[in-house]
Every structure is written in C-alpha cells, then in structure tokens.
Length: 325
Ligand SMILES: Cc1cc2nc3c(=O)[nH]c(=O)nc-3n(C[C@H](O)[C@H](O)[C@H](O)COP(=O)(O)OP(=O)(O)OC[C@H]3O[C@@H](n4cnc5c(N)ncnc54)[C@H](O)[C@@H]3O)c2cc1C
Image (tube, rainbow, N blue to C red; front, top):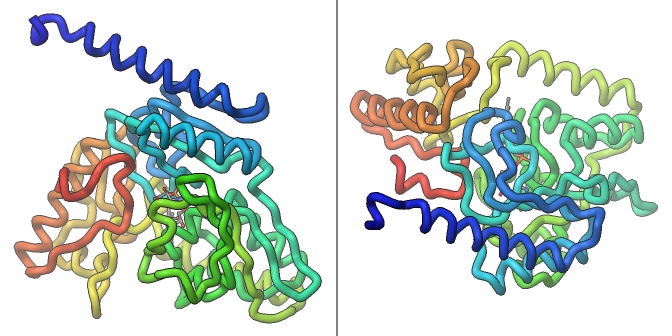
C-alpha cells in the first residue's frame, strides 16, 4: 500500500513543515523574512541544488535567538548561510531551517576610537575591503575577490595571498544554538586551515578586527587592484564554488588534478575548469548530482594516479561528504 501510494507520507511531511513554519513565525517580528521551500541555487555562486524546507532572514538578534530556540525545541536542523560561495547544495535541497544573515542589520562596518574595527557577520567581504579603503585602514586587501560575507569567512578561516581571516581577527561575537550571545577572544577559538571549530554549531554575529596600519586610500586601492589582477589571471569567471579540494600538505590540489589530465573533464554541465583545475564550473544548468559525480571522478583519478586522497574544501550543504563520496 505504502509503495503504491506514497502521497500520504509526503502530505504528512508537508504538514510537519507547515507546523514548524507556524511555530517559528510566531516568535519573530514582521521585518524577519520566513518562508518555506526557498530555492537555494540562486543564493550560491555555483548555482546548483534544491530548496530549503524552511528559510529565514532574521532582522535582529532577538529574532535570530527565537528562531534558534524554536528550532532546537522542535528538533530541527539549522544551517547558516552566508553568500553561498563555498557550498554545493544537493538537488533534493536541505531538510531543515536555513538562516541567512542577509538583512542589513547584520552588515555593520564600524571603525572604533581605539583604532580597531567592528564588522557584522552579514557584511560582504567586497564591502569590507571597499569601506576599509575609504577609511584608510590597511590589512584587509587579501580578502578582495573572495565572494563571501564575514560570517562565512570566519567559519571557513578564508585565506588568500598568504593571509588568513584569523590573522586580522581579535574576537568573534557568536550566538550559541541555545541563543546565548558570547564574545570569544581569538586565543580561545580553535582555528585551522579552512576551519573554525566553534562556528560549526554557533552563529557568528560579528567580529572585532585589527587593521595592520593606517594608510592612504590610494595605496590600499593599488594593492587591492594588484590582487584583483592576479585573481583574474588565475581563476575562471564562470559560476563556481571556489576551490573544490583542500591542498594536501606540501602540494596543491590543482596541480595534482592538472597532472592527471583532468582539465576540461565533464559530467553533464559540470566541468573541471581549464583555467584552474581545482575549480568545478557550472557551464549553465548543471545539477547538484552532476557536480557530485564529477567530484567523485576527480578524486578517484587522483587517488589512482597519485595515491592522494583529496579532501573537499567546499561544503556539501545539509549532507555529509562521507555519505556521497
Ligand atoms: C570565485 C571564488 C573564489 C574564491 N576564493 C577563495 C579564496 O581565495 N580563499 C578562500 O578561503 N575561499 C575562497 N572562496 C570560497 C568562499 O568564498 C569562502 O570560503 C567564503 O569565506 C565563504 O563565505 P560565504 O559567506 O559565501 O559562506 P557560505 O558559502 O554561505 O557558507 C560557508 C560555511 O560557513 C557557514 N556560515 C556562513 N555564515 C555563517 C555565520 N554567520 N556563522 C557561522 N557559520 C556561517 C555555512 O554554514 C557554511 O558551513 C572562493 C569562492 C569562489 C566562488
């Protein structure tokens, strides 16, 4: 009976999501956006994948707290979403509550009297670079061209041009899944290559940054322009999620993939970039399944030819890489 008529189960699940949405909505103000079945592909740079069963853009810390507490009480999985520039969203979407700090409330940029800088987790790195340049604050130029927001850059300890996000961080303000706000000094955080342990579960709300020095806007602008040129020469312009694999110790994932002759390798509309072998590009209309199949193929070929097990840098949203690789 169940096999022939799966619809009742689907209807029951839909009723559950509707009930979750009602409960979440009861605790937030009108400025907070809360919807069901929000498509996620367009909210990511790779542009693949399905919808979030529940999606919210809280307009205040109180609303974020309410969402987290209600989600916890109802046993819902919660996923933070930044600018989606390091994510592969599966085609079936995400069974849980996706929360994006996309409301302008989270995009603060505030130079402080002691020379430090407060930034909100929702501030785009591009805007951080631009505003710091205008304010004559040097030290953030390496972030130019990383298409994420501050929260995602903290969670990933994003890095480029020899620097890491946590090189410029003094403290992070976060909200625990229970809704408690804490300011944590850098020394207390467990930070590594593309990883910040504490932000696996907690939400970054903002960070206290330390500029390297004061400098003339023109000089900072020149450095940013130099980094931008370097990126334009070495990275594809098509939709991607940045580097797919972490660099193994002592070598670069891109070099290994290139040496295996995999540039241009395709599954459907997903392709290993001919410009940078560690990027998978979406040639237009790729699916999440095609991207995952290509990730599997590249890993298998590199393991076979080089004996190296590449580890994904990109995050698989709502699922575990172990389950699909
Ligand atoms: C063209 C291109 C170039 C890139 N170049 C670089 C590069 O040079 N260096 C580099 O390191 N990366 C690079 N990336 C990858 C990506 O931009 C970075 O990892 C970026 O920091 C991700 O930020 P995001 O806001 O897009 O996060 P998302 O992709 O939205 O999320 C990434 C992770 O962070 C979590 N997260 C997001 N916001 C929060 C929050 N507020 N609190 C807690 N967790 C949160 C998410 O749950 C997810 O686990 C590149 C990507 C592209 C597409």
